[in-house]
Structure formats: structure tokens, C-alpha cells
Amino acid sequence: MENTAKPIFLVPTDFSEVCNNAMKQAANSAKEMGAKICLLHIINTDTRSYLRKENLETTVLEDKLAAMAEDLGKEYGIETCHQLKEGSIFTDIAEVAKDLDAKFIFLGTHGKSGMQHLTGSFAIKVITSAEMPTIVVQERPFNEAPKNIVLPVTSEAGPMEKTRYAAMVAKGFNAKIHLYQIGASEEEVGKAVQIMSEYFDKNDIKYDVTLARAGNFSKQVIDFAVTNNSDMILIMTNPDKSWTKFILGSYDEEMIFNVPQIPVMCVNPRKKEWEKLRLL
Image (cartoon, rainbow, N blue to C red; front, top):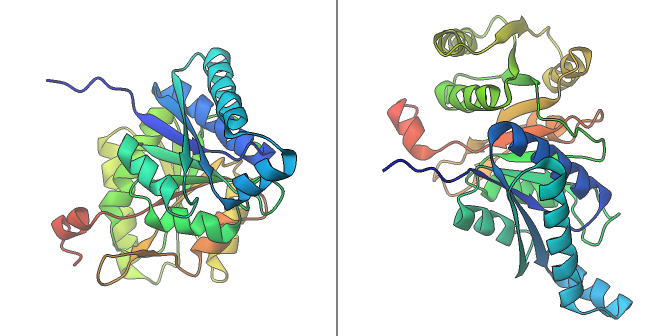
């Protein structure tokens, strides 16, 4: 029997402006892809401290979250839900996403301006622990679904998995993929780009290929994204040898927390896919 359930986009929130940015981008993306939005607030030590300081009960947050979900559904014409959970933002976001079988996590990160400290280290913890892609959103609003996605290609590892995700996103959002390839002297990277191009051709995905110059690759990716009015960068983490955790490379963090504040989709590879491709 065909599964007709809508995909779920999970949006953690501490009710800050940057989380509202993530929520709006998720809502527009959900509208385009026919998905459902679930808003999540984790009641952690920061939340409890805020409630004590303001002399408020937890029910205030429950009511606020419910109202946000209802208003979002009405404004964007999408299905929504909400969840309030006691725990840690470092572990429970990924767990809730897994329980919901969420397709994406839209994660706002800002520092110490909100109720919770949604800092860079927090974002990295969520990114590297979640089974599904995490879209990191900063303070700059990108309220529409992505249409121009930069896909940096830095190694031959996992090209098909990264390609399939890019194709799924491009089709779902009717977007174009910009393959941005590290130096021409790296033969294996060139082969990966060829594999990706053939897959995109076969699946009618709009794309182009650009070769980076010598120099700081992450800076070139960001500059390229700005020049081409790109609204998302897609990267893939690397697994450790035991596949118990995922690691961000030297280029990745600079791209995730880029100064122009372009949203970044971070994908963790799946072991079974790498085994299929004989990369293990």
C-alpha cells in the first residue's frame, strides 16, 4: 500500500527572530513540497531560568507554540503541529526528528540573543547527530524555498548519495544546482563531477558546473554563491572510521556560518549507501 503521509519538516524554536526566519523558510519550502511543519521547543535549563525570571508557567510556552503553529498554518495554507519537550537541545532535537521521521530540520542559530543559547557549537552538535539533513539558518531572512543551490565538490567520497539529495531537493523546490568543483588537478573529483552531471541529465535536473581557482575553497564557494544570488549551499559531513559520529571538514564550518548568512543544508552520509558504492 502506498504511503501517502506528508513529509515533515521539523523547526526547533526558542521564539527568537532567527528561529522565526527558519520557520518562515521551512513554511515556504513545505508549501512548495507539500510537507507538514512541526514546531518544537525543548524545555531546557535556559527555558526554566527564563520562566523563573519572568514568573511564568510552562503552559504559557505551550499556548504560545500552539498559537504560532496555528497562525503559520493559516498564513501559508499548510498543515502544522507542535511539540513541547523536556530535555537538552544538544540531544533531543535529533531524537524528536528521528521519532517523527522528519525529512529536514530547519535550524536557526544566533548566539545569545534568544531565550536559549543557539550558538555555533549547538548547531554543529545537531548537524552531526541527526540522521536527516539539517538546514542551518542565520539572522538574514531567506523566506522563500531555495531556487539556486550551490553544491561544492571536494572529493570523490559519496558522490551518488550527495547527488541524490541534491536532485531530490532540486525537484521538490524546482531549483537549479550549481556544481562548484575544487581544483582541476584532482582527477577523482573530476570523475565525481562527471557522475553527478550524468545523473542530473538523466533525471532532468537543471545544473551547471564551475571550476574553482587555486586558493581558499570555502571563501570561493561563498563568493560564488553571493555572485549567483544563491539561496542555499549543500554540503556533506564525513563519517569517522567506526561510523559512530560525523565530522565537519576544514571547509565546512566556514561555509555553514558564512558571513553573507546564506542557509546551508548539511547531509550526513548513510553507511549502507557508502557500502553499495564500495567506499568502505
